[in-house]
Image (cartoon, rainbow, N blue to C red; front, side):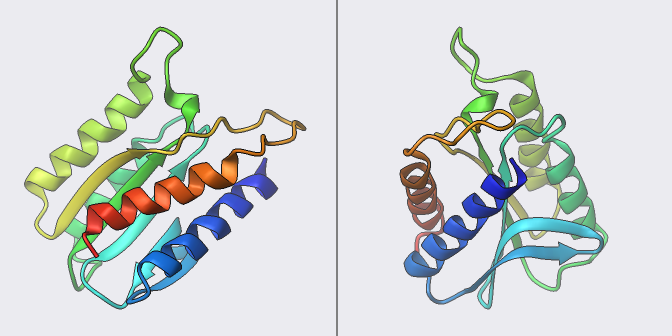
Length: 155
């Protein structure tokens, strides 16, 4: 799935660059030793996008990045957008506690860490299981997510 995830990151980077050309978009942007999936630099706020496909502990991303913001690692405001795949949706409706915990931490950090803002959004694709071929709808889902991020930023 690593190859598929890299394709998702690259497609998201390119789609965001089309929609938000005032920023320089890159994959694997490092903050300390932490790689962030996609980042938009060059304008305020610094936009960090984490794509959660099947992560066991997605709350770790907003925790680390909020801590880094609190400790002064960023010289300007930061906005973390966390995109959650369908993996975090429950068959019975709603979302998993893993997603709820990540969003709780992100929203708590927004309220208490100066210069940090968080948003959790849907990435409506089902990540393929080991060895499976991704469905043909994934590119449209990434495009929709880029539209949602651009709308969120109001640019």
